[in-house]
Image (cartoon, rainbow, N blue to C red; front, side, top):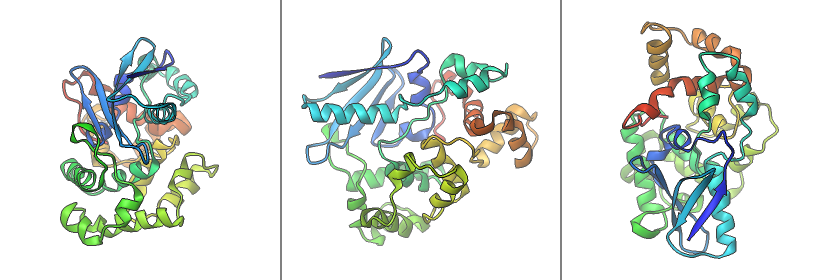
Length: 300
């Protein structure tokens, strides 16, 4: 069974799929040989479904592993549109970068859409697991969570765990089995706050708060500092923050400062011309060469 979802002429499936390291964390799985993005979709009470997402002619093709009804098709379509940012209006961003010769490639190649999970909760858990650690440890933590708490789909793939499943586990599970270290109590507390209604992370997608205030709200979640909050802002469509870390600083030095160490102020000044889009312009600049690489870097 296959679903076809129309795309705009500016949509670039490959650039979106490898826009950052989420594609390499389950329930995502990207095969670059044929550019197919696998994803396990949680269908609620029904058994989870693994889908294969690829590019067709002016459309996204979603191949299902079994036939499903209209309600499931609606859910799958909604999730795929959300994950690939198909409804994001990129016109203002593209207009901004087109005026700059060094950045006009972004609009002409259809870059700028950042892959995300179907839920803000999944994105937030993953983001917490990227802080203060190597990508290898991030990968280990997320595989541990999905393997232990996700619901099984076909091919032994599993969904991302729900907040209810995570809240039910003791802190010891996160510390000893997931190897989450200092994050162990943070992950359990986040899940408990979500299911109790103390925090509604999904509302961040439609929040009318200014970015600075929304960032402060995000930082009220334990384990979320400036880096994690500014990256989360990007996943909900806010691009004011640069989310600087050691990798970005090093890459900027190599490609924009003759490999000389530079200050954060200089990086901010360099991208300030793009206004509210500066964080997205920076990320596209840092990752321009990823599509040329045989194996894209596994980095947020």
